[in-house]
Image (cartoon, rainbow, N blue to C red):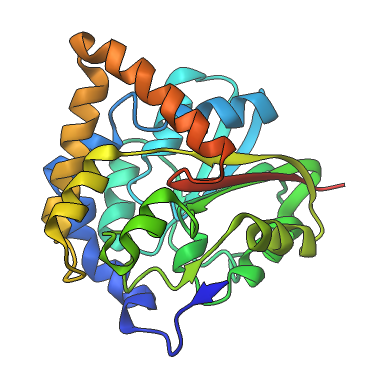
Length: 268
């Protein structure tokens, strides 16, 4: 497993709090996050594991996942988010999402237990991901699920581009592979129930290959790309390309080369 040592300043809560308004609340980022297509895969997975119940989304950002969950199944789920960026919390609450600013490790849930705890692209940011996974185990009901998605340290993009890949970031302090991710979750007490790979963005691959440098991509550029790819997913005339890309993504997932890894575990 690859990890950052020593930890950069980007691993601190203060960094994410400062990033809130210029990035999380940028028009492009919000438009992408709150588009109906944004969390298609994550919503399908959660629905398959848990048709109804209480959901804790750790690192919920502006609350878009919980918002979409409530929009699609308004009576099925009770959602709570945890976030460290004050600006993102304020925006989530404006959209009707319940969010707390306290850390998962210290928040007093007053005996409450959850049916699902989600970590969507969060564990790669944490200096001690094991502590967060163990805490998730504690607050889940027996039979509850923990669902994790992280960048794939062995993805096609990582193998091809290496440090030139835009998601090799200072704030990504862990780079998981499938065995290390599973070892982390099973070590916390979870039973593996489902796992796989997801996402593939050939536009990112092409742009980063042409760029040919590890100088990094600005937050504005990342947000603008999210807006563009979201628009492409929504365009009716691109549906055949979307179907073809879906087949490519599934093939890459089987080969262990998709952009992300996901893992779902059950508390006995």
